[in-house]
Length: 419
Image (cartoon, rainbow, N blue to C red; front, side):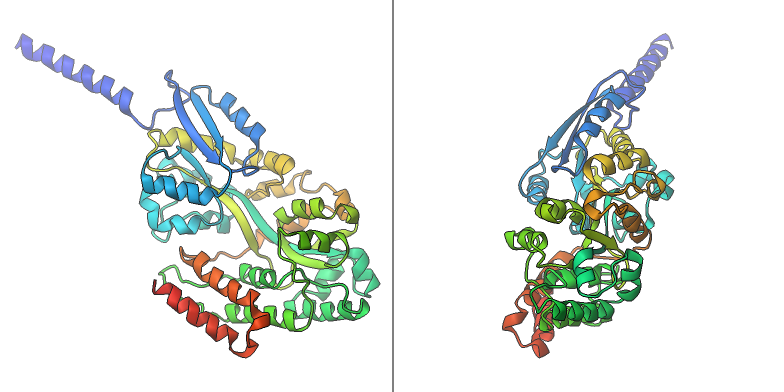
């Protein structure tokens, strides 16, 4: 009897010790044992100074931050395929939907109480991190609400409205905007273009729609969704009317176009403010921003996830939740121009600050209103592949028969989907 009692005591002690040492959900703030978490991000996706503060915020966590250069997505997918070397926390860009088929490789953030903070974030942004099966693999980081960037001086010279409210009122639709482009073209004898490139027309119109190429059930609707056809036709119309400068983003041609007055306007995400200011220093004070023709959209924005290989998912989630809380998202807007996905930040003085490059206009107010009105939409994991086919075809429209190009693009998409 005495021997059985001692055996029971030893068994309980072993279970208690075992439970304490192997639990993946120990509270980092209460545990005396310091753990290590590795975090992958790319340059300017998270404020470096905030990451340093995170190390102070979680003294029991040794946070190893790794800024990954080059092709971030390829490195992540290669690492996942190798099933070795994955970080505990990883930033994901707007290609998160490509990882939905691999949802079992990530923790469901709802398991750690993510739903408790859901009301602090834009609903459409939150939904983009949730798979069709209801598993939340991506926690909201920044967003990319869109608006119309335009040169006030060029609009004035062309006889177009210049006040942001008036511009939005008179160019509330893409057709209104196109007509204004014809007026501007005539005023400058075709030497100034209303828009930068044809792909950007197509992208921005689709970004405003609640339906894209696929349903949540996985059915392809690109050939029946009227928005896809309307976006295509409007893009071709801009091309045929000579309203496009044929200057692709991130090229010397685009930089020169916006700096030398060849491009009078374009619709872009909030993060285009920085490349515009860097490319067009000679135009400081001449640009303005207003709500985009056709409605509000979103392009870009990021998420944070926890790979299943992490041994400390609860601690990783606490770090993510702290990094992306409303206060810290507002901090990153100040330091890194990452636009918050937390609408409470939109009422802050920081959002309402005037900007010299935009003639003293507080452009944050315009983008905040856009962010509030983005529609919930489903992309699907094959969105990048299908969209890539469509934009490649569109970029070659000068060498195609416009009457048949759309159908030919759709046939190419059908072949792509059979692969």
